[in-house]
Length: 113
Length: 112
Image (cartoon, rainbow over all chains, first blue to last red; front, side, top):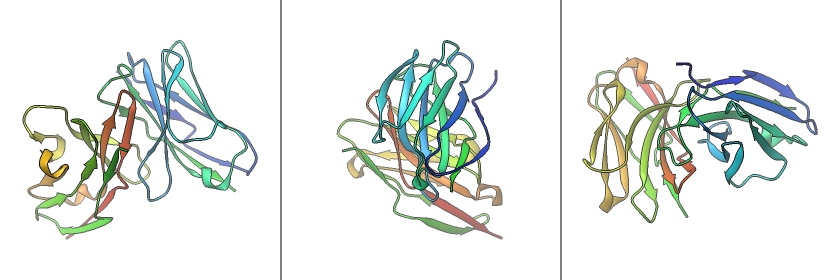
């Protein structure tokens, strides 16, 4: 059974650019959530996808968007990058949308210059 | 609104000493509570969880936590800390069907 994987590990982008981060869920998990963790902070919930539909969103602007594919892998897209978007982005999968346990990937470190 | 407070930004304990990390939550109903650990540059690893039943829960790596409804607390404890326990610890509450709210974390330093 493979765990949650994320790519790339690190990424450097320039303000105003767009970025796509990828996540592969743990085998059998149909729900994925994305979190932003700024330096020195706890993770902040961005949104959750269940069976390819967004079914919950935190306090993030529309330039943060996502996709979930039929194999339950997922993408996080951020448009018009701002300096404050620099953070560790974590993906977490769970067995169902109300699933109690989430399994986290190692994260993607995004730096916006 | 739901929230999680970890009052201690960082804590230093000697190796072999006992540890208690504090967590207070704000949530109207009985919450689902979690403790996660994060090593530098890594994702989050679940230490333990509380859903219902026995208010003292056991987790991995020798950690335990106690749910106290009257105090809205879910403190993490370990009787004897090892140098490898040095990391960031996050308390979290699952609020509603999909959203997990994390505290700001407590960084644990272990001195020899």
